[in-house]
Length: 583
Image (tube, helix red, strand yellow):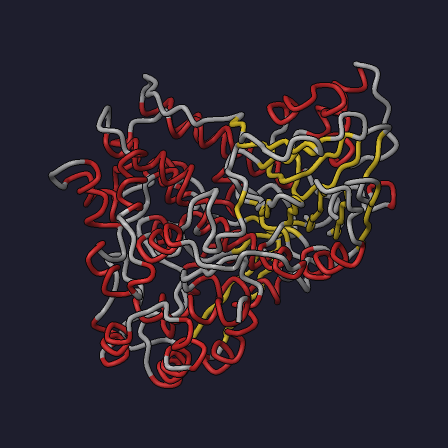
């Protein structure tokens, strides 16, 4: 919905309006409709607005209420219900926005207000009386929140580049984050980022900073409970249908503007369209790319079936490879962190077109993680060995040995990634339950969810993800993983879809957002990656070992990850991102 930023000084210096303006300018694409700032004493807050709920000036931010000042990014789906509750408690409202509901909730419940909020959010509240700053991020981390903390100041922003624009950032590469990045296909779980001087608030977590006390302690206000519950298969299916339907409706209702659907042609996005059958004039959007000999560049044959069944207002776009190559630098420039998923660029190009028609879209991200839809889940389940060994075999992009051969000795570090995963996959209970829990709470946040928010908001387009609804995720976590794995994964969703979608859409092999040019690297794409990895900047950075890069460049299609990503694209993208944002 917006871009937020701010600075809290610990050194008696008044926040600089120029620094705040630089961060706000960097966030302008996230909020093209309005802007505002607040500076008083030790605090400076900035906001860029994308108007979705209460389009009037009454919802302008930063929003003040007596001793409180708020900047907020996201959407609170239960804001109407909370508003009524707060009115009964004696609060008064001057807007119809969900922003003001957060402000009054904090006035009523303090830091515990986050437990009352149902939605996706990242916000900061300055308490003038207490002289402290409260930061909070939603339970699943759908909305981002980065910060830089020094002895002189705390700065925060919706994107990492916004913090870089303000300067005074330690831009050295974090060696532990680098290991995560090159092992977990660019996932760097919170609180780390690839840069030592920037961290991010973890999902379901709040932080409080005081002018007098520079230290802080993260406070977790939500944890996913995956204790299994006994129900019949029919009960599981019915509850899943009702909860998903409610999640979709809440995301449609919480908007004073039209809402569309990103329709890939897969089960997840098609199911969202099916659940919206009662709504008229639903806009759907699909994108395709050039084919490669090994893989088609679109899934129109499936998305068209859904469109024909529900008569949506459909928009179809085809992007030629020369446009993909030409626009790559743009997409990389708006990445908060380096994102190797080939669909990151696809979402960027799709969002550009979609934003010309609507401001809000529903997207199917999260369904595979919540309901076990990826091909590697049954492989892990059937494998032998420790939980860590079973996970690593089918998920890690490279072994620790290969990591040491990939990066310069300056970045050689112990295998922190395996240690982190081992800690999350405790050797108790059901293996796949642990994997799915970790995926939803740690990995998904910094892979598909981050990509979708980043690339849609770059065009002032808000993506809402019903499959990561808090209630749906909690329901699925208590469901036996064996039920999810039936019919090659996502069985509950397939069962729901039988009454809504053609069987050809439901029973097709699992597809992925196809962009063959970034998977089968050849021609002009290979030349581009070669130029980047042989550039003066790359050599001077001394991040990668030349022998390893030469090996990838010689036969790029021979070096794929277990998840079928190009290792050459992975290292080239990281270098391109560093050149764009660091130099």
